Image 1 (tube, rainbow, N blue to C red):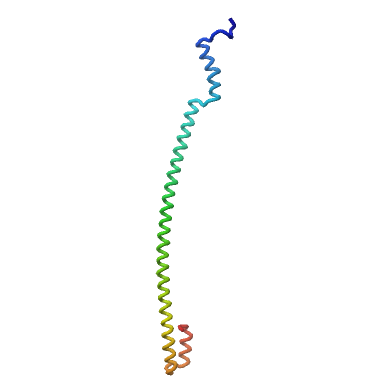
Image 2 (image 1 turned 45 degrees about the vertical axis):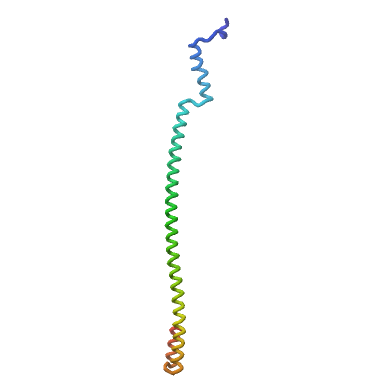
Length: 129
């Protein structure tokens, strides 16, 4: 019988597998060691992702609180501005009435010669009317 045709012994099969077959498989497939390394890397990435997600939610909540505080401040400012506008409207109305009243009083004082021209000019310089 030819040396190539004789059946392999268990010992020869083990040697062949260790020297030829298993190294050839390692070139095509990931080994258990490599797979465990990838698994560790994946778990680390997963932990980093969870940390980033937690930071994102924390930032989102902080931003929401900031936005709500800003809107509350804007509301307070707008209320104060509204009050000031109303007060200005009332003050302008009162000043208009006062000017009209002073025009009437000064006109009457001028007609009755209670105020002389010099006094009337001084009142005009004040810019009240």
